[in-house]
Image (cartoon, rainbow, N blue to C red):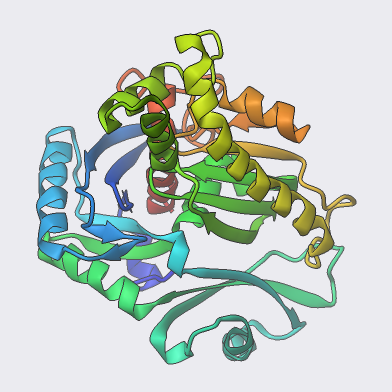
Length: 364
């Protein structure tokens, strides 16, 4: 969504996915070979603290420096295009599913603007607005379901400015949750509602997806850095030591006399509280669920760089009494049962979920 080239031109241009978050950036480029897809290039870099805050760019020159270096390294790995599909942070964006009466598609654009005024808490002249009409089904023959998305121009324009300065040409920008769903769900569809939890270093996104659309998104502050800080404080060690202990030990009670486990349980309990809230909330507010008999969340899918925390899947599954699994960001790229490539092992690829989802969009 938020296309910046005409559809006619965009369809002929291969583009790579570029995911920029507060503490890191990642890129991924895919290439078709017959009916197969392969990873053409990828890269990542850390972003110094304070350069971005909750997705807002605070230091353009420093971000440009990091981006230029990462692009040069990716070029050496085979990156062959300057066209990009970029991500926008979840914290400041809006996604809603609205219902419209059955109408000619030419009338939808004006109707979307009327509905957006009621659903988006910002003046329409201050946002980029886009929409997608969902395919109709026999369960909803009398109206249209439409996804509307919006992002403030004050958030988007600095990204466009930086892309121009480093020679990148954005075909489109889209909200992170859209790319994540495209990466993790086979053909971007789910017969039953699923909750995707994208665990990042600086924030965690909740995405409820059902049918062919995102139905709800929100962001919470319980994140990887939150867990690292808990370990550092509990054990009186440095941030670097705490991060290493988190990665190697996680929720294994048998290691380090269970001290890492004890440090992680309180912040994870805070995460559990958020999860339980939305597991209970969604079935009561799923007014757009026409095609499912049971609107309850069927399972939880974990993604993001922090999702590989040892023991996390079993911890959440035990506490929530619901199936929990690690997402597979290669599900629409590699031929099953492959779930990784030598250059990018599976656990590392979890951190590339958004970038891979954007790269898939770049092939459309």
